[in-house]
Image (cartoon, rainbow, N blue to C red; front, side, top):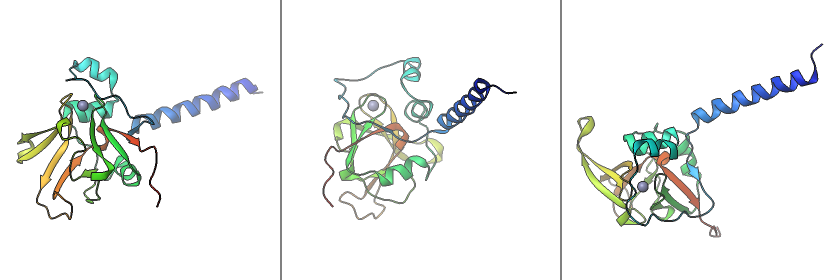
Length: 179
Ligand SMILES: [Zn+2]
């Protein structure tokens, strides 16, 4: 006869295994209830320190210039997020906000302008056989994505900051505007 304890251990193990598998594939954007404190100055850390601080996905995007999958879970989540601000997952600097967010249909979170221009640096990027402009966090040097200009979007700047949502922290606005 199987004891109750054996059954509960079994159920517990199965639940645990399911959770672990889910966590491994979890790439949804980090979300916080409170606006994090802005870094006072430049944030410099070793690779080991970043690895401890960031999830594997965040580390890959921010520190290894990785690109998340187009039209992935992060993008689906981004499309349904309401008013709020987007901060660097590495150093918490304010980068973008829902005010400049637009639906470009490109498969990655898009903004037509940064929310705080001084926190964003643009760099020439000639990797992958293309001449592109890389978007980097000014405070920690984390890779955010690329910016493209003159594509014909009906936005005030006609720029598309094509950003990896996995490298951002979303903070929903406290008071959602009435619809
Ligand atoms: Zn940063």
